[in-house]
Image (cartoon, rainbow, N blue to C red):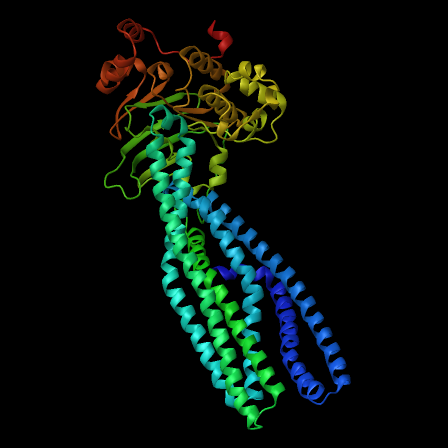
Length: 593
């Protein structure tokens, strides 16, 4: 909890102002019992109306000053707390943006959302109270104790007894509530996860008639969360009556003991009343601190969860001494004896991968499901880093390049097409915000997306819903391909980006790509043999190992794994034709005719 307070540094001036205003407010409140004693002893007892009016006027002025200071201090407290929460939220967001897939696998999406919203809101709430009550209450309590002891030393043991009772009650609450608050935030994560799964998988749930099962999962998590909230709320509900009971018993004890001292002329009536007021201020100060302790355990848990994110050092980050690639017009991508395994895995996913993807050629990667195709190409943009070996671009290890510079070299089309809320145009020019209309249209035309875009009501200005939910899977893939083409990079990576396209659209798109990639390095991961049949180099993976490299014709003769994949997708006539037909060269579409 306390480590997160270092981010309050920009608001030091606000805190100083709040402290000064709080001091004035405390001073004003501490003067009121003395004035009240003066009114009782000199005004009422001696029947001096002048003292009553003059002292009463002074009390009104002091009360107004204290009230104004409290309002201003509250304003600055709100400004500081909300600004602090904004800064923490920005830091968490930027930190998460720099996470690799390893860190994202460690923190679930649901947990990161909870930490960025609910946890920060808890800290913001407590921060406002810290800047108002926590600064005010100790000053008030300490000042009231000094004034009370100075006024009636013989009765000071009553205040000490009340303070000990309050501290004991608060300690018991803290011991019982802290573990529950830790469990509470984890259940909020779990509830968020279950809710997100239900919303994103709604169609699958309905298709398999699993609504009751999912309702049961949600109900179980919801009941656990409700049970802990009830426990905490009951504990909080019991706390306030106990504190009021201590307050009332203290008042009774002061009156009982004070009456004895008044009877023996050891104290005046006004002094007993003033002592009672000071005792009330002391107990009220501890009540305020108690209120903080009610919220502090949950805020402490939330702060720990946020600091866990902020303290996480990303595995993948910019090198201390980065290198640069001089010529980026034509680049070569080389895998040199690459080994890779996921964090926590016992075995390597990739074993001794070595091949080179040259500019002006299409390098295809094929293999059965789970052979490591996507894992392999994820090493190029450093979504993961190799455990052994090197991934080189023009002879420079990708780990020696700045991430921003590396990503500028790559046009990446993910296996799962991702679109963002906005318009068709804003999604296509996502990687190149300054792209002109003719560039956007040309990329859409190449990606075979122009026809369906023109049919939309507003064309390129048509809205795209969150995650592209208002377009089909094939349309999302084509828009994703157009987005990469607009960027105009020397490396294009297609991670099974044609799977949602029909064969006709697939063929037309690949043919339209040819004139666009004459001097680029193209790496295609594909399930369909027809998608990569004309590639200049096909790399065949099996259980994370390279079992064949060559053209389609060569692999049909020499690679058994490739033969099995091809025979499962192509007819015998197509296979015979592929064996006798030469591999097509890269050439523009108009020359193909």
